[in-house]
Length: 289
Image (cartoon, rainbow, N blue to C red; front, top):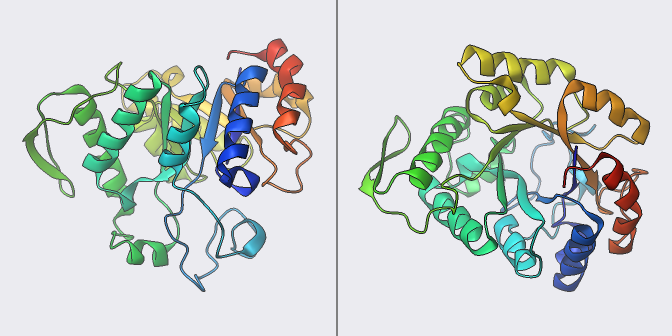
C-alpha cells in the first residue's frame, strides 16, 4: 500500500519554506506522494453547497483562505525533491482549457522526471464557475471530453480532438510527458464520479472514507467499459485507527492519504514536518513507496 499526504498546499504549507520542509520530510519518511487542492477564487458569500461538511462551508468556514495554485506549488517542491510524486487532489478540470492543462502538466512532469499525478474533479461552487466564465451545468460532459483530450495531447504529435465541447485541429503541444502518460485520478464522492473513474480514470479518490458502494461501482463500470477493473487504483483517506488498514487492503485499496495539520481535529493529522518521520515504521510495514 502507498502512503500520501493530502491537502499540502494549505495551512502552514502556504509558506514556501515550510512547504519544502514538508516535502523533504515526507520523502525521507517514505511517503509516496503529496496531494494538493484547488480553488482559483472563492466568491464572497457563496451559497453553502460544499458537499463534504455540515453547513455547506469549507474547512474553517473562511472565505479569504490562502490557497496557492496547486501546479505552481507542486513545481516549487518538485525542485527540492527527487522521488516523491506530486498530485492534484483535485484540479477542477472543467474550469480550465484542456490545452493549457496539457501543456502545464506535461511541462511539470517533464521537469520533475515523470512524478506527476493529475487528480481531477468537476467542482461544486457555481459562483466560482461564473467568475471564471466556465460552464457549471455542463461540467460533467466537459470533464469527460477534457480527460480524453489531455490523453490525446500527451500521446499524439500532432494531436487532434473533435468533441461537442472541446475541439482543436492538428497541433503540436511539446514537450509531452516522458512516458507519454500522466495518471489521471478521478476524485469525488458521487456515483457520477465513480462511473467516470471506471470509464476514464487511472484511479478513483472518494473524498471521504472508503465507500465500498462507490468503489464497487467504479470497478463495475470499468468492466462494462471493457477495461480491467484492477487498473483503476483506489485512493482513500487514512483511517484514524491503523488497524483498519487490513480491511482496506482486502478491499483492494492501493493508497491512503494522511492529512496535514490544516485538517484540524483528526488524530492522524501531521502537526508539522517533523511528524512525518514518525510514520516511517508504518510505511515500511505496509509500504509500496
